[in-house]
Length: 313
Image (cartoon, rainbow, N blue to C red):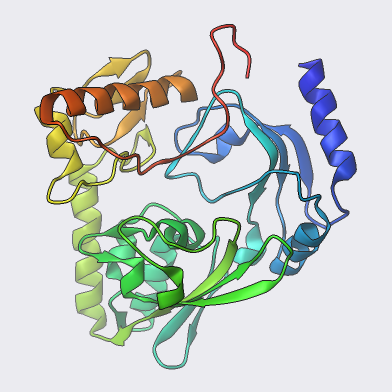
């Protein structure tokens, strides 16, 4: 622990002076839906894009940077995360309706808030975002989708900062969207996006959003400590069906369990570690490969280092 503390303090001494707070050895598991995993060496919460740009301009290039959102599709390993973990603050949570039936939203805005803003403005086409348990920044990175639509279907422009703090604008085409991923450079930090809606009937928009809400509540363990959909759907297949076929529904490892309601969800029943949850996911992948010949690909983002058998990172 003293070594970790000394390492974090040494890193703090190398970081630029900014407005946003730095926290050494921050328990970022509290920022994730799984509520599991080790600490961030340093956590930085920029209040706005200008402060984030100042940080990026001054941070040494050898310092690893990891960006997290609301932690809904994130698993932190128990050895923690080296370098600086960035969590976007309140200055990235603005939503505004603009001309041409467009909505501009900060990267920290929940997807459901974008859907609600569109409804209030009488704009259709964004109802699917009601069913995505995440924020705009993560949705851009992974081309988030639900109920038949994806970010690629509605995103007009994304704004990001590169590792040098320069502001970059990317069109839909430049994002290189594919199924559950974008081709945008990995070192870009998204700060906002513009989405396109179409004029619609507010009552019909609300009805569609209610349908999505009811469908999620009845088919997904939304009140549990989970990370959302665990694995991507292979071409022509449904991940949950493959998992069910392999006999993994309800499979457990310690306090980690494959959901009995929707078996493409992993659940932390309270004391599961990040490494246990990941190991359970690997158990599922192995059983599905043995039963079907199909290798599932993780959809949940996993960050940090696992602990070894001696409990060391």
